Image (cartoon, rainbow, N blue to C red; front, side):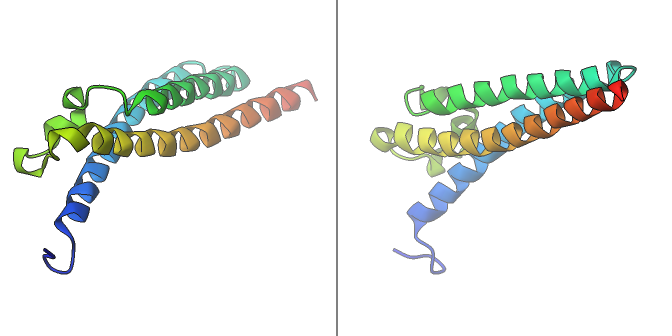
Length: 135
């Protein structure tokens, strides 16, 4: 039955997807905050600071890829997404692992792409700064 022209299952999926993106964004945000603090601590040596940021971001990217790989096999009831879903909005048990895991996998992969791009920018900046110091 359509409510306001939107299928309730689609509305439920949108809510799960939104919560998955929020959860992964929050975790990545805190990680980037730590990386930025370390980069500021290394700011006396800009090339080294950018290199550290690039490598740390690559490590985050690898962690996100690992989480994406195992998202659909993890216990969905122990995820932040599941805990933030209202009890009435939770999918039924047979499909819950697939639905929540799929949304988390999608979010992990999206953020892994963004962190890979950030790592590329930081490592390129490190290379350019090191070249500039040589010249």
